[in-house]
Length: 164
Image (cartoon, rainbow, N blue to C red):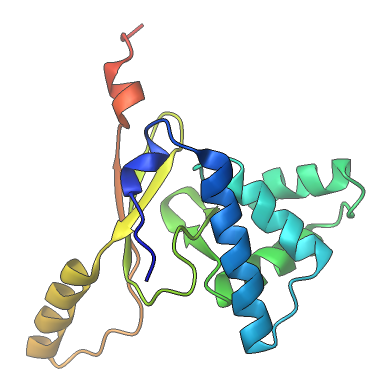
């Protein structure tokens, strides 16, 4: 398991190393599983890794089209679906957007802290929260198949910005 500092989404860090670590892990995971990280899929992951922000599918599509990868929505949607299915990206339901997984390959139940102003997204381990949810569900006789925990608020930069 890789140690990941979730605050890096909101603070200065070596982002090139951060992104390269995820790309390296993505390549290894796809090789191990037999999945194909095609040039379009890899480019979509690179786009998502450029910043710790959630991006809508059409924002990704605009970038792909500008780079000659195609301008039809299925191009972006299929690549994003692949990345989510492979655990390389997450869908942020609150924003109807996507973000690169900070710890691909690690079994985890992420909690997302989303800045409502700048759309920065920090992914942090949420196994304790997931355990609490599963315990409550068990008492109800309910089986949890998937959780998506998202907290909306302000990142340190936006919280410190003067109100205009």
